[in-house]
Amino acid sequence: MNRFTFLILIVLSFLPPIVYAIWIRNTEKIDRESWMPIILCFIWGATIAVVAAVILEIILEIPLSISIKDGNVIGLIMAILIAPFAEELTKPLALRMKVVNRELDELEDGLIYGAVAGLGFSATENMLYGWSFLLQGKNLGGYSVGLFFIVFLIFMLIRSFGGCLLHATATAWTGYGIGKSVMEKTSVFKIFPFFVLAFFLHSCYNLLVAFEINGVVIGFVIAMFLVFVSVYVVRKKIQFLDSKSR
Image 1 (cartoon, rainbow, N blue to C red):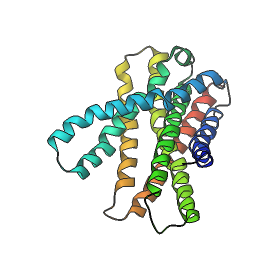
Image 2: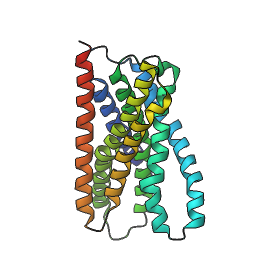
Image 3: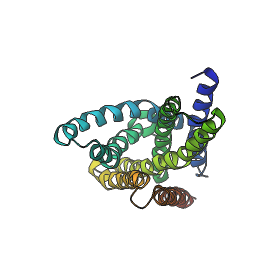
Image 4: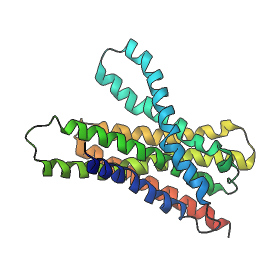
């Protein structure tokens, strides 16, 4: 991979999540969040959350590989159970950083910071998937460079919408639970229902994009619709809570 291709990969991986993060942050009109905690949440998601999720997934995969011999079954379980659990557990921990935690003074704040942490995670995930796609492309014969590049752009475009906004909206709900827990000084166990919601959204999306019984296209279309509805609901929730502070 030459430097120009790598630069394109970085831009395609990180630019959409950054734009989405600004968009989500600016959904709030009154007392918008400071840039520093926003940036730190994004960095957490793009670095610590990714590493922690990978380690947790590896640990949880060990008993699966011992008890199940079918690689396809293991892959499906990893996609719809293990990955959503590990990722939705590590991403929202960004809100536990002191510089972020002390900013949780409105209910919509948790939604915003959670979404931004999810977008940071999706940026690094986009880069890793894109890197893997490009490396696999070297082994594909019969494709011109131009055609392969177009396919690569389509692949990254899909990830820039589906993957990015899925991570944002799912983690936004856990962030909302954390924000409520901090503001209302309630037990951390009150966060659990919101974590379950985040896990459910993430799991459903992964299942849909992997579901091939009725065709990949049908699952993909439903997955994109799920993402569209999810981000619409999250933004409406932010706007509603923000309007109450007026």
